[in-house]
Amino acid sequence: MLLAALACAVSAFALPEKLYLVGNFNNYSTPNNDTNLYVLSPTDTEGGYSGTFDIPAQPGTNQLKFKVYTEKTWNSDESYGNRYAPDLYCFSNVNAETILYSSKNESTQYAVCGNWKGGKITFSCRLDESKGEMQITLTTPGQPVTPPVPEKVWLIGDFNDWAVPTASTDNGAIGLTKTVDGFSSTYITPYYVAENAAIPSGRARFVFYYIDPKDSKGKFVESANNPNVFGIYRLFEDDKYGFATGYWNSEKSPVHDNLAAARANATYIANYTGPSLKINFVWNMPLETPSDSYYYWNDAPINDMNHLNLYIENIDTDEKRIIRTEEDNWYISWSKVEISGNVRIWLTDAEELPVVNKWGLYEDANLTKSGSNIRSFCIKDGKPLTVNTGDLYRLITGSIDKRNHTMYCYMYGSDYSNIDKIYVIGYMSSWIPPIENNASKFPVLEEVESGIYEGIVSCPVPSASFPDPHFRFAYALNGWDNPGSIGSSWYDSVPVNVSFADNKYESDITIDGKGNWSLPEWKVEGDVKMRVNLRNLTLTLTNLSENSVTEIGADDENAPVSYYNMQGQRVANPANGIFIRVQGNKSRKVAID
Image (cartoon, rainbow, N blue to C red; front, side, top):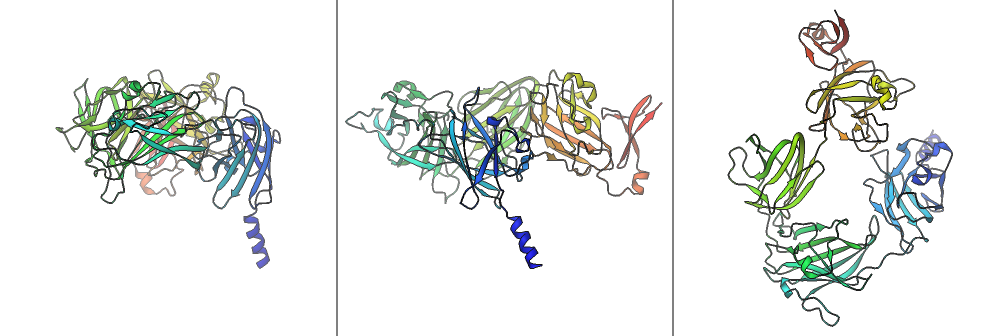
């Protein structure tokens, strides 16, 4: 018995004989195909695996994408991938390192090398299945070396009357010291630090300056994607410092050849009283441009921002409403607030109408289409955020970072103006391709009001051919891989299990998402009322079957009877058609003459 127990224990922790790479270099062929196999073999190190391959540059992209499988299977649960898919960057003089995570425990994506130029590459892994983690190192001797970076960065501004450093003197500019942040999850990050920038009170308006190693010219860097006036606050008495940060957009470089252009959008700490700041300036090595900046102020005042609610004024209808926001130590936030037409959005400490005290943006800002966003300093008596959604409904989500009074706001939603029906695709239609020729074969949800679609769908018992009761939706029949689907998430990964509570289930939906929902406890054929709301991006399922009922008692026999048409709409006097008869927790289709 003891030997048997020990044998079981050993097998439970046995390491895989091999690991398998899957990615764009082998057309994402899973290991069960026995073709295009990229095998990592065990090394002398416990849990270690390694393999060297010659992988050419990929057509049409400079990206190399990969996952690591622990078994010779198609099942993505046996793979390790990136949790957030940051880019890795490969250089000949620096190894790229990251951690991959087990797809059994959570949805993972392909790891991405963002600057692959083709050549020899060695994948070295250390697997720890007990933690669901795999450390991986990429060695790429044929790649270019790391690009040059500035040797020094200075701060110039009001405090030194905007004098530019020269070869012989700093001219009162504050010099930042270059430091290398070792290995991050993606690449070596050089950053530049001034531990004690002794800027006098009221003089904290500044830009960065450096000598570009590519052309040896002086360059000036404007404020980083922040409003050009902001404050720094701390939250509690025992906080060490107040903190603010800015991120630059690589598509629009903030770098200028002349001081005047950068100075027009200088960083200005409006509430700064001294005596000093710690300042970090971060360089994006692969893109050869600044990436972000950080400001730490030991003597920052305690945050004076009250709890603020969203205050919405509809210009078209003169309707006014207050939306209660959520709050934690760092943020005041709101999500999925539905709006339509011409609106102005303020913030207020009021709990109910009318509103007297309002907070707003430092400068004019507006959202004009889905997918747009704003970021602005939020102040008392500021300007409203203006939004025009046209004839459609949109959703607003946002937050205020209480550490620096910065408001972030994003508008999203779908254009449902030309969508008159939604198709249910998946196991209930035998996974036939979602193309126009198959339109008549899918269950359909009809539009019951603008942007809202409903229908009753017959959900069969999973079969041997299709054992997994997975499904999603399509607003256009463009095939599996083209835009047109509505899913539980962006990626076709682990399905979201539907769990009914009082025969109801609600979920967020993702437009053009490929994630599925699943009915894991579906035991008998039954009907589900499905409601897809493209206005607030939600799915509501109502179970009309006996699948979630453990015992049917006398109460169901005595319960009142109601009827619904095949679009899920209640019918008072059913006649001349097929209807859903619902009594208590039981439902069935009936033909009524």
